Structures are given as C-alpha cells and as structure tokens.
Length: 109
Length: 113
Image (cartoon, each protein chain N blue to C red):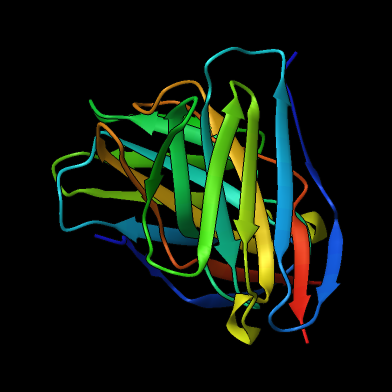
C-alpha cells in the first residue's frame, strides 16, 4: 500500500528545476506533500484532493492526476533551502493513510 | 492556534529499560493522534493512531504500546527497550482523516544502548 516515490535522490545546482513523483497502485482520495530537514520534524507543504488538482506556493507546485493515481511535486529555480527529504502521503479514504519512502533532494551552490 | 509538543527531545536508554514519551496538543478538541517512528535515513513508519480517549489502533506489532488518557494527550511506552527501538519518534495530530493535514511535533531522538 505504500506509494512509490521517484527518484530516490536527486542533486541539483541552485536555480535548477526538479520533479518528484509519487504513485499508488490504489485509487487515491488525496495526496499530501511534506519536506523534512535532517533531524527535524516533517513540515507540511500542500494537500491535493481528488478531482484533479494543481496547487502552487511560491516556486513549489504540485499536481494530482486522479486517474493515473499519481502526483508530482515541481520545484522551480531551486534554492539552497529546498534541500531535504520530500515525502508524499497518500490517502485511500477513511483511516488509510501512508507515507512514501521519501526523496532526498540536495541543492548545491 | 493549535500547537503540538512532545518530550523529551532526546533520550539515551539502556537495553531492557522502560520508555515513556509524551505528547500534548493544544487549541483543538478530539484530534486524531499518531505516533510515527523514523529509523536513521528511512521513511515514516506509523506505529499507533487514536481517534479518541482510550481508542488506540496499532499498525505494527512490537514491544511498544500507546495510551490516550486524556483527549489531547498521547503517550508512547515500552516496558523493556530493544536496540532496534532506537530512532526518531514523532507525535502528530490531525482533525479527522480524510483530506486533513497531519501536523508533527518536534520529535524525540531515542538511542538504546
């Protein structure tokens, strides 16, 4: 039931773009995205609900393709502060929520 | 506004000793409460969740237990710690399940030696 995230890790230079994908084998009610800095708690980025959503916050945006049961997180013109591990969390409805394994993003100067 | 606080922040315990991690949420009522564990460099593993006082669901069989004696208090315990219990423990809350954000506490680093 755990969603699959790809890539597992990515290294960027400041200013470059990145895409992180999250896919599930089950129909999804919602997808959540979190970022975790080393040694800190995960921080909520955004939630996308079924119905096919796109959301954006500054230079971080995400899409949710309900039919394909997948979501993508887009990081544009990456900054050093974007470094961390990104987790997607997928909700199948009811009490069924599970996090993906994470994607480690490193932004270099 | 809602806040979540867990303690202690760090803990070094010998094998076989007991454990108690505590978490409290303020500014909301009847939240869903969660305990997650994260091994070094790994993902988030859900250990327990609770939808109300004394209502605990266990996701993974282990030597840990959870209790919710009050609406906004969630406690993670063990009678005898194992080396494999080491990790980063996170308490979290949400308002219900469907489509609701999960907010995490600061986390507790547990090292079993």
